[in-house]
Image (cartoon, rainbow, N blue to C red; front, top):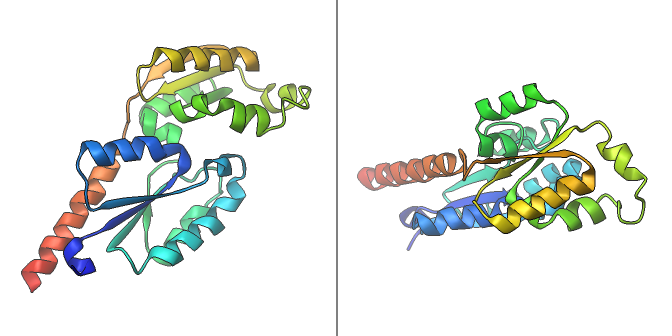
Length: 213
C-alpha cells in the first residue's frame, strides 16, 4: 500500500500529552494516526524543544502524508513556530497545554483572577516528584522553593479524569509548595477537537487524491 493510499498522520507530541493522545487514538479508532513523543522533561528546558522537534520532523516528514505538532508555544518564545514555519506545519493553538485543556476562555479567566497560579495536569500530578521536586532540585536545596514559587499564590489542578488518587496527590503537591489548592475537571478540553480536525483534514485530502486518480 502506498503512502497516499494509507493516508497517514503523524502527531508529534509532548510526552506530557502521550497518555491522553493515545487514549483519543484508541477510543476514536484512528488507525491512520501514529504518535511520537518528545521527552516530557523538556518541560523544564523549553529552549531545547525547537531543535529536538526539528530533528523529529526531518526524520519523519517523508514517511507520512501529514504531520501535526501537539505542542503549544510551551515557553519557547516563538521557537516552535519558527520550526513549523520552515516545514509548513501546524500546532495546537495557544501558549501551552493548560490553555487547550481548560479552553482558552476559561484559562484566561483563571489567569486574570490570579496571575500567581501554578497549574497541574494529570501528567504533572503523576510526575510531580520527578519533574518538580527533583527536576528543580528542591529535594537537595529546599531553600529554592521560595525562589521558584514565592510569587505563586495558588495551585489549580486541571484534571483530565475524575480520579480520587490524583486529586489527593495534587492536594499534596499544593501542600508541599505551600499554596492554596483548587481543582477544575476539564476532561480532554479542546485537545480532542483539534486532533479530530486533523484526522478529518487527512480523510478529505485522501478522498481528493483518490478522486483525482
